Image 1 (tube, rainbow, N blue to C red):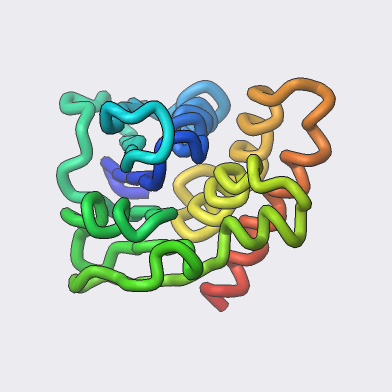
Image 2: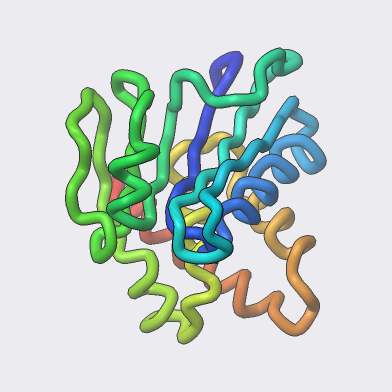
Length: 182
């Protein structure tokens, strides 16, 4: 990993992407002992408006908590892609939900499509775990934390009754992203 790695999770309010960012920051800092900060931004709407969560992970202390040159970005909706898929560095990664964000903005970065919401609904049976699928995919694509650390952080955040559901969702996202990269 380079000195500083910046990730942005974006979508609609209520999709759990701020939670995904918090989980990633905890995987990096608490489990792997790296420096990490997480910040968030969302519109005035409680649900449905564009929202983002940014995570910065580094080997050294992080002096500025906002993403400036994004290494990897996730956009779950077209509005989020249009609004937040900017500042992605040359050679960076943009992961789009193929059903809800079909149009990638222009840029010198790699674009990948994954039907995240559809996978949550058809493969897992619960759309509520789409954020965990997305998190698994982003971890697989970036390698910013290990697969095991990501899973451990996810499972530490969910109630006991939902451990198996989230474990399955995380693995699905991770494996689907590995297939995209292959």
